[in-house]
Length: 304
Image (cartoon, rainbow, N blue to C red; front, side, top):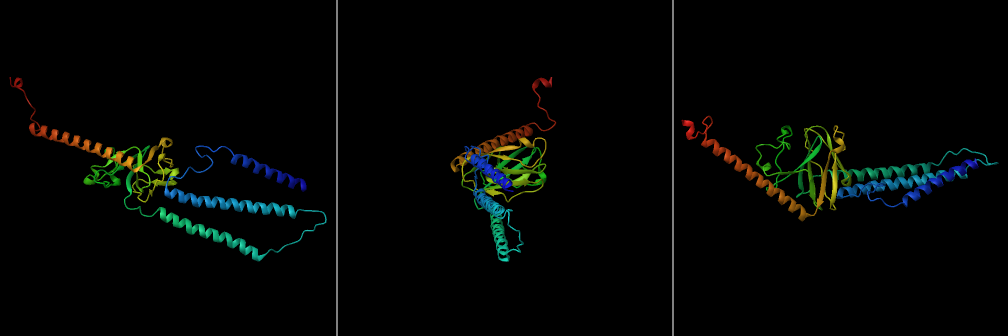
């Protein structure tokens, strides 16, 4: 029996020693042994809850295993020691049942409040972005000079109308699109999530954010507030077809000044595009009025 206990203790010590060397290893830049650094207000609150649960379970594990090993050694079989039956202690059983119950109730209450907070209506003044997923990429639409996103009809998606805009809504005329999600730091961002074909997912690990994009629906509860600038990656974590592995889009969190400069450039480019389109329509209208349908222009030689 003693040899078995000695081997058990030796193996336990070996595992703890190996774990200590791993803990003292050089910290990896990409944080392979832990979750990536949180980059939003909500992500930090989620990490607080997850870290509490992790350290709590780790402490309980160490405590229970220590008691287990202690009793295993103390009450091992020895010559002249007779086993006896113990009915137990009702008071201790009530205590070690009440404590976990109280902890679980506290976690339920706190996590429910956190869930409600993360799913609450976005704050006033949030940057609104329409994010449309498709096989296999992402399109982002921002409000133009009027500050209003055009209305969307999920039945209107087509090759020529990739955002499903309502034709009669003038608010969408000056909206501009982007293949990257550019957002300002320290300001709420409200995402309107859509899918043009199959189920996709909006997944950013640093934001602790995952939300499925369902065809025929507008997911309007997604919002977050970035806390640091940097480059991140939007990925689809819902298997959506053969090109799923490469369905990504860059995310840039920039300062407010840089965002306003980028936004102004996009708005001006959209305005120039609208002017060019208007000029082309005017030219076509003028040509049509000068030469009515069926009346082709003729030169003098054609009269001969």
